[in-house]
Image 1 (cartoon, helix red, strand yellow):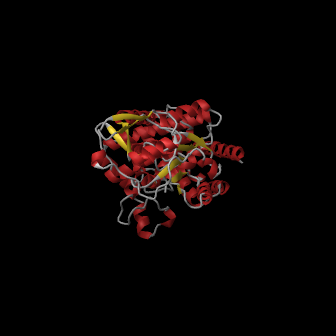
Image 2 (image 1 turned 120 degrees about the vertical axis):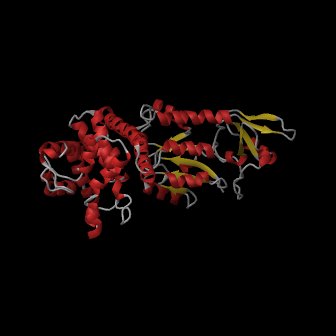
Image 3 (image 1 turned 90 degrees about the vertical axis):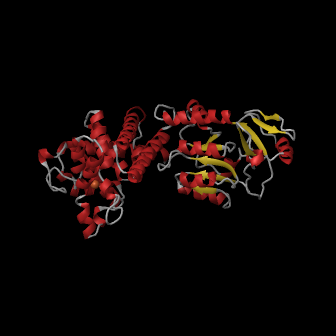
Length: 454
Ligand SMILES: [Fe+2]
């Protein structure tokens, strides 16, 4: 049996679709989990419906992998913001191999309507081509891959008994169920030219390379930037830190800065990005917020990225592998006595790891060392304050304190009250003013978005 696959960040939508399909649809909030189904070659799929908001994985990378494993599979997009912009829609569909766009709120039956069934469902596993069916410069696709869908995505070819190649269908032509059925009685595989497939793949790759300049909606850009940043962090954890990794990090931070500048200026809606950064992890959270504040304070862009951005990413490196395991996910309030003793040294330990393995500027190291110090000398590890505290370290320290509060208190109003009561007095006025201005913009933006959708 072929099953549709739904990937959406909203689990309520997925639960409803699962119910309406009587449990036959495959549903997941994670692109990584979805790829397990896509790459299991024996598994029949009828179509994929994807919303690009999973910040743990790149939607464009997801599409590229899907294209490689299931070139014939119809793909659809959940994208609520494209209805008013058909031009943008057309460009995206062209570059991302997408056949249609839906709202997540639409009933299962409406989503299934374009998945025309051309062949009877089969109970047998999807076939991989045997050695004899493999041809040079061609990709063999099981003919059952065309069981669903309305048109052929490539020029397709077959071979007769005398190994003569013949055109089976032209790219874009409608799939005729009778024609496909009678062909499926004679052949198990049809062929696409590798060069045609590569053309599609390179268009997709080009979109990935220039995603910030392309016409993708902001949700895609945000997810792409955050998932790239997250991937870079994972690699850093695995491989340690070296100059190459630092260079790569700077590129990612440059993308983050560009994204923030764009969203903030002409298109509004920065809260969506920030909400997602919150879910990523502390480094991404700190990098996003501190870059926003530095922008508000009109700090020079390169210095912001090189000092503050980089320090945000490197600040907790020493917490990934400690004698007490990975402490990065734990809040300071949840640590036991021994863990806390180690934790209180982590700014210095992180700076030591970085300085031992890279040529990072001294000023960035200073900000890493001071990322939990406070202006009134109540921070740690050295109770540095006053003029000794670097202004960017002060920003990073405040954002770290803010992060801790958002993790223990859910409500926006309560978060601000807690900060007012416990945090703001430890920092200088201009940093607090900038923080409040940035935060109120984000909250205003969030309220406007809520009004629009509700
Ligand atoms: Fe830290």
